[in-house]
Image (tube, rainbow, N blue to C red; front, side, top):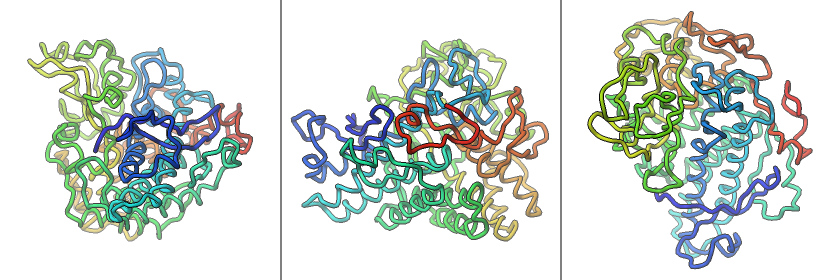
Length: 512
């Protein structure tokens, strides 16, 4: 997929939702900021560029969120599985300690980034049908991609905030009433997500796509995840939606288009991006300055001296209790699998002991360096959003809820555990299999932005000491903070709340 430098007309102006065009300078001599949506959407190339703007927006997770922090940390800091080695970012510290409020910069930036992506998707969906002449197959595909991306953005929004404004048309007038849209029920938002994804399913996307664009496999995988969430809290749609989740995940499994990597290192190997186990990823490029992966320095040990990066922050590192919760013999805890406890001085020198575990599943050896090879300090490593391991676990969990464990559900779980060199029991009860799958999700999908959403939909949290599951409310993290009812949602950002009275009331437990 082309990595384009996008200039957004779509902005969040003074905290309100001003939804306009996502344009790029593409076969145009004039400055794209002088183009109106009506004059811009005249060529097939404009359709591609407008959808590329939505893809580019997925990189918001690596955008900075104050000193030594990035947006992706919102989803990790609230799980209790990570901590920080630096105390200089108060917003991050407040997330880690469950003391965040509506002024938190991470929360504000997620809201703004998600609606920015939605605004550009809305514009693509509205304007691409009117571009003529244009190949009809390509037109249908770009609209399908935009609907998939809009669904993904709303899926993040509704799980974080609950009821949110549901906007499916572009707003090009700052005086339009939709600028101050009120909140739509979660059920209606989920119905729109399902509608977008089922329409994307029928848009002629290929089964797989190594360019980084959306594929049929990505649409089906996301839809399986959505159905699984709808079956649980807070919608509680139950058995019918577990069946939908299991069936949709099984379509991906039986397609034969995806498989687990045999080596964990391929999860962060640039040569395996967008293929194999990777179903859909946020795209980065080391050669494009505003498209570089911004995760690396944050995940490195604080002042660890083990990388070509001059700044090594350590503001998201595993808690020792979570690292220790993996089963004995689990290959994922072996050196340089999911974690590392030793690395090379300056990235390419003598091996040094770090005396603690750090996250290796997102480690870029090209950027950081490896023995005898100096790093570039510029990362283009993609960020996983959907991978085949998650699909196997969705199928196993959902099908178990439909009718208990079967040979097929156990086989799906066993694939994950076989790779980890772990033994899988031959028989389970429905209850023991349920927790076995949950446990595997916590370990296999750690530090990929999944655990927090599992906590919310299950109302359960993995207990690292007992290897069982506690109720969400009252669960105490290993380093002290305790989850409360209000933490099931994050607060509406102060800027949005103050500028749009229609958003009120604030989510329960928070005050402005």
